[in-house]
Image 1 (cartoon, rainbow, N blue to C red):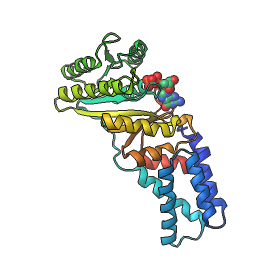
Image 2 (cartoon, rainbow, N blue to C red; image 1 turned 90 degrees about the vertical axis):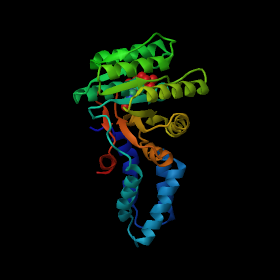
Image 3 (cartoon, helix red, strand yellow; image 1 turned 180 degrees about the horizontal axis):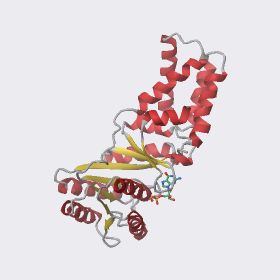
Image 4 (tube, protein in one colour; image 1 turned 30 degrees about the vertical axis):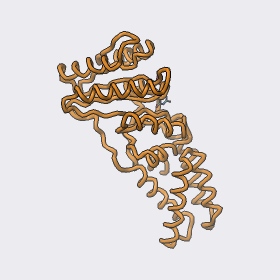
Length: 295
Ligand code: GDP
């Protein structure tokens, strides 16, 4: 069980059936492929690019049988998804992970999962309750910290989140932790306020980091499809995003959104969330992902 069965049974098997079930390569086949990709949230731009490129490659390589398209198609997916993937959270030197994303995307859960995994790798982990806007957010992070058995730096609701980040970075340095994960707000009164706050937190973290590795990890909910893409563009414009964790892939048959995220944003997908449990987090590995869908 890898949490990808919905996407596998829908998107991947439809693609497979299309390539194996047709007797000839014609416009209808390409149109049907387009339809399947769009249904799977691959997005119009990425779909067009994939299908046009497949047509060209098939022509160039003199491909006659639809079944032969399948390998070319898998290579295309692999080309889109690979690149820029590396696991940065396994090193014994301070890494500061600033986690951003809209409420409900799975920020807190993903922070808990990352913390658990890092702890399992014998890393010292510290959390920072930077979403000072909601009391529930602070409590939820504290719950996770208890579950995992790591400390959390928090201030009162309504306090300055940049001050929490500041304290947390100082604590991380003085306690010599390996990984500091900074939670942030996912919704303030306006998007403008939110972005201002995130920029400030990012600035403080960068300024105080003393050469620690700082990464902004954007949490995106795969079930929100194309909405996730526009969210990512907004966040990336204001706080440069270094990597994406795509959550709830287990909850959607439209895992094609992962292609759109990578192709349209050019930001590496680092992690995927495949369930609500503490272990339901995977490093994103393009080949493993593609194999999980098609083999
Ligand atoms: P936050 O508001 O961004 O901090 O979101 P939460 O971490 O509270 O998550 C919102 C909901 O999504 C919770 O019910 C989580 O259990 C659920 N969730 C988070 N990640 C995943 C995932 O990968 N798969 C599934 N099925 N649910 C998830």
